[in-house]
Amino acid sequence: MATTGTTPPTMVARIACHPMFRLLIAFLFVVGSYAIAFGVGHALGPHKGPWLLLLACVCVAAIFVASYALFCRFIEQRPVVEFALPGAATELGAGIATGLLLFSAVVAVIAGLGGYSVVGTRGAAVLVPALAISIASGFSEEIIFRGWFFRLVEQWLGTWIALILSAALFGALHLGNENASLLAGAAIALEAGIMLAAIYLITRRLWAAIGVHAAWNFAQGGIYGIPVSGGAMDGVLVPRISGPDLLTGGAFGAEASLPAIIVATAFGVVMLVIAYRRGGFVAPFWMRRD
Figure (cartoon, rainbow, N blue to C red):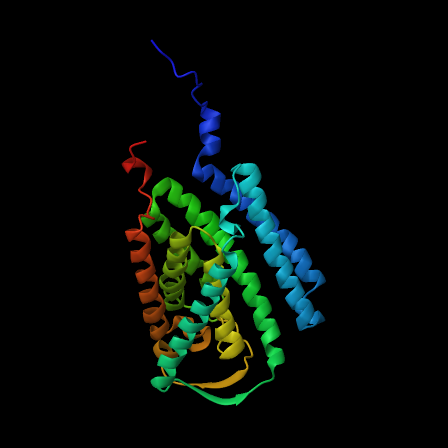
C-alpha cells in the first residue's frame, strides 16, 4: 500500500492545535496583560494628570498589541495578520469616522425626540482623558473579544455560534459596570457585539473594529458628555438629558437607549450581510468536509 510519507499527528499535537486549547492559553495572556497594564496604570494613573493618563492608556494599548503578537508568533506560529500595517491607516481611519458618525446619529435621534440638549460647553482639555480611555478600551477589548475569543470560537464552532457567544459575553461583562441593568447588557450585546464582530468578519483584521469602538466611546463621553457604559465623563458639550430611560439610556448612557439599539444593530446587521455575501462565514466543525 502506498503511503504519503507523513506521520499522523499525535493526540498531544491535536489537543495543542485545538482552538479551545489555544483559547485557554489566550486567557493566560489576557491575565498577564492586565497585570502588566495595572502596574503601568498605577505608575501613571489619573491622579497624576490627564497627559500621564493618556500615556498610560497608550502603554496599555501597546501591551495588549504586543501580547497578541507574541501569542500569534509563538503559540499559533503564524504572522500577526490582524495587525498587518499595509492598509492599517485606511481601515483605522474608516473605523474612527464610522464610530463618530454612528454615535452622532444616535444623539441626533435622541435630541430630535427631546431627550438631549446642549446647555453649555467646556474647554478642549476634557478631550484628553476621554481620548485616553477610548484608546485603552478600544484596543484591549477588541483584542480580547474579537481577536481572541470570537476568532478562536469561530474556528471551532463556526461564525454564528461565535457571534452569539461573543456578543452575549461582551454584554454580560458590562453588567458589572456602574448603573448597569439587564437592558444595558442586552443593548451592548446587540449593538457592539454584533457590529464589531461583523466588521472583523469583513476585514479579518482588528484596525477597523478598534477605530469604531474607540471613536464611539470618545464621541459619547468626550464630545457629547454622556456617560460611557455607566461611567460619567465630562465632554466638550454640557448636556441636559431628560425623558424616559428607554429614550436616553438613563444613568448608564445612550448605549442603553432604544435609538442606539436600533441604529447600531441595524448597521451591524448590514455588515453581517456583507460579510456573508463575501463568503466570510465559517461553518461549525461538524459540517466541514475536512
